[in-house]
Image (tube, rainbow, N blue to C red; front, side, top):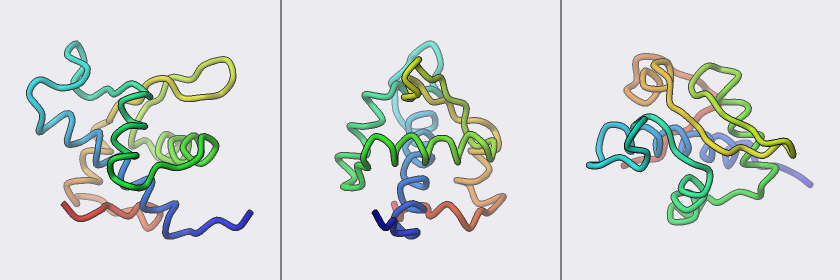
Length: 109
């Protein structure tokens, strides 16, 4: 299966932007106890509404990339699927433009 690098970059950007908007722009946030966190089900729905819903393996790969770069933290289940993601300060910097990553394409808002 061939993967489109631009799509991978867009999926990563959509994930990180969704976390940012949830933390900074919704009242109340999805996860009231931790506004920087989002459960997998909500994230999947956001990606679906954004028309970039990836296959499960592609979603997990995108989250692993973002986690390895320090843009988010993730909780994983025993099967290796993400259960919860949490935006970090470095992820905020990425969305706000303080830092750049050629592997992440933020969608226009």
